[in-house]
Image (cartoon, rainbow, N blue to C red):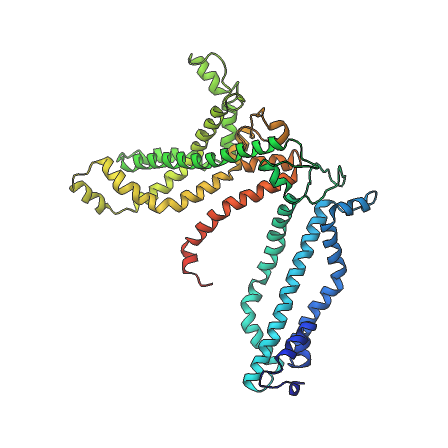
Length: 452
């Protein structure tokens, strides 16, 4: 049927409209690409066959409360599965639309080739050309499919929960209708008045969010700065020392980094307990008369937070010590020799040569460490469990005095099943950390030199 197409481009509308009418139809009717057209047609046939299931799942996702009321008393799917099914259906629609666009583009491209060559390509030529152009797409297709269903779908699931009032559910049992509430959860966290389910303690929620968010940023900055400073001091001392025993000291200082951090933090939590070894030792030395609540004093959150930062130094300093030592050994000895000839003392050499050069090389790693510490779940959870309790908001919001955002999310989504607020907090963390991730990625050598 190629003779029904003109070579002057006037048949383009017919080709495109036919392809738009049904996937692959133009390939079969006009372009003699029967196999390619059949493959596109099979995709649409499968989609149409499954369209009932797809749109049913979308309806169940949109009408969460209605579905609950009509399903009560029956063996209805749990909310988690209905939300996942709805998102999966949405992804299938997106994939189908992309395939439809590719089908139309393929037909238009084939017609353009026909206009240029004045003849239709054979099925073999068409397939060879298609596989040649689409080989990279076929290569990455499995990875893309895995990313869609194992990364994007869970991300969307965790995000859309923040626009519902989903909380306090137990398996298949429904303790209340789950409905879409829009931005009410965001309004609650930022101090607005909310009317409806799960709105108790709106002022306490905003107070807790402000307290936890500020402490999270302070924690990330101080944990990074103190570890970097401590690592710099130790690396400089060990680098400048010319004793033969220096490698032994370096090996000993690396041990806290080599031991799993969970074990280290739990040991410190036992040592700093009210009846732990630290208090007992201080009593024996006559320094204190009563036990100090290093990690549980709800009247002195400053003390508890300071202890958390100091214990984090125990874990983080060895990492920066190793990193900075490597950077210092890469500095040419000629630079130091020239500085000494010019009369610079040790402090001047360090502040004008060593520190600027090391800092220049490690700034991206400092940024990465800062973003890591903002989400450093283990350092807080395994040391204090997010506690001690804060009388102002812990009862209502479940946020402890040393909770950072990630530990607060964990507490709400596991122990208290407040999934909607936990989802909002996760989105806020993403909004804050995404720019740092993009910055680090865009400054990598592979990104700058790669061809996209």
